[in-house]
Amino acid sequence: MPSAVSPPRLSGSKRRRPARVLFPSLVTVIALWYLLHTRERAAGLTPSDGADSTGQKRNTHSFDEGGAHEQSSLRQARTTHPRSPSAPPLSSSWALEAEQAAWRVPPKYSTHTCNGQKFYDNWHMTTCKFDNICLNASTGEFEYYVDPSAIPGGLSQGVFIDFDAVGNALIEFPDKMLNPGHSLIDSNVSWRPVVRRTRFPKLGPRVKWAPSSQALIAAMPPPLLWNFGHVMFDVLVPVFNMQQQFGLYDPSAQILIPFAVNGTESSLRYWLPTLINTKDRNKSVLHLTYHSPAAWTREYAAQVLGDKGDGLVCFHATLAGTGMLNRQQADVDALPYRQAVVRHLGIREEAPRRPVITILNKKGRRMVENFREVAKIIRTRYPHSQVNVVDFGKQPDLTMRQQVQLMADTSILISPCGGLATVLTFLRPQSTAIVLNYWNTIQQRSMQMEDNYYQHMEYLDFQYMPVNPADYEDTFDRPWCEIHENGTRLEDAHSVILGSLVHCNIHFKGEGLDRLLNYVDNAMLRWAARWGRYDVLKGGTRQSYSPLTAEVVVDGTGAAGGSDALPAAAS
Image (cartoon, rainbow, N blue to C red; front, side, top):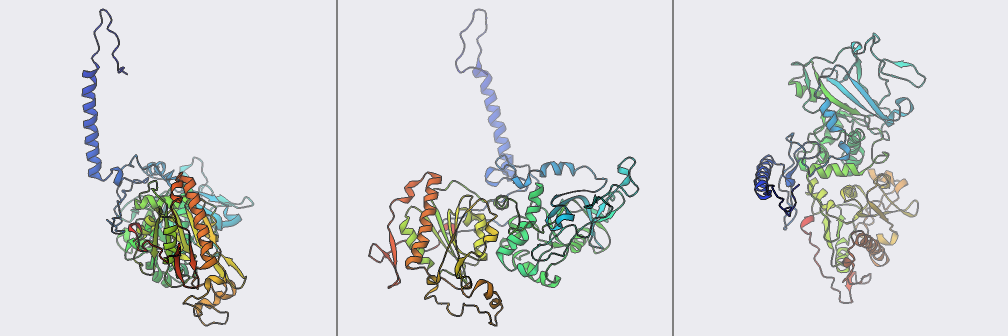
């Protein structure tokens, strides 16, 4: 490499002229960079609109100063641009690139691999990946091809599929092989492919590769599909976890429904459009991670083949076995799901300039009735923070992307327990979630509603704030919110387990308010220590709540200051 300072001229030698050599090279480099950059912008691959780890084009969404405004809808096109250097592979897609390269070679037979426990020990805990199997449009079954001629001197029936617990050879997959649903909901449902002793079928008009390389088998329970938390944690997270376990997450994968569990097909068809196959894809939990809506197996085959006749629709990879991959039971990392959602939606995350405290309120039951007053106190206590107030009762039209962006921008979340709180999944790692408990009148103690889910989420700081009977005093929903053992309403059946106040509102005052503020104080201390920003703790005014006048009191003036309007990032 030429030195910045020219060496002494030696007798009989020619002096080097680095400027003339380097200057044309620099021009060439700049020209090439400009040409490539222009092409990238034309293809939509600039850092502001890059491609994700799977080669899918990302979308750019932004929020303006006047409120959260989605600039563009989620794209359905499946582009195959190369991955942007600014977007490294997701941990849940570590094997995808190598698998895709192998898929370019025409297959001769099917193979499979499984993880978790062996099916003969606990088939609910088994998850399998089947390579090169086909969906029979007539039977709705998946066919697994065993080719005896592929192995020199192979057995007439081909290689054995597997062996049972005592060493007996299996030439068919066992009846109880994989649970495609939820093991806590239906422990009897099972799924397996059927074995065909022939080579992989020759492609033609009635034998086609599916538009998606991957099929994800998911038998869904209708009773859970109306609730955001259940849809995410008990239905769609398990589907994602199958891909995560094999390093094959790809948003273009196709979810296929073979049948309903714990309910009828008609019931499942009724509930699917609520949060999964929604009319507006921006309201779909499924579209947080996948492009295409879930499809019934035979209907999908007919769509690919063009009619309801016989034929085969083949997949390079088919994953099945969600039985114990739900958030309640799964012993797998939870962060990759959050990372996949953020990448798929093109959410931007930058180092925070100040702590953002978001208070969620919900419509109907378990409201914090004075949550806006609480927000005013926190604003005055921490003037260098931003306080978001999100009232889902008055703002039910937030898109899924807006909710994810709101959580990604949040440092400290305060939320009642229940399905609403599950949006905390999308908080930035190491953020604090202050989830309000409920008072169980049966056990006479404060209890958490979703700790069976949150205990498997390793990247957040969960703070379960206890409540007591005083926090339920003077609320406007008593006594009709209470449930009773001998009541006639459907929810009354839960009273013997959850107690009578599980659905009731709370109102923080006095000691209860001090308790909540203590949780906020500790969360602010952790944020300041993590980011080295102790300046955010200065300048606040200590406040208390007057239970006699039911007014916010600040320095004895009665004026809390600050607006409770929803800021730009939360509207």
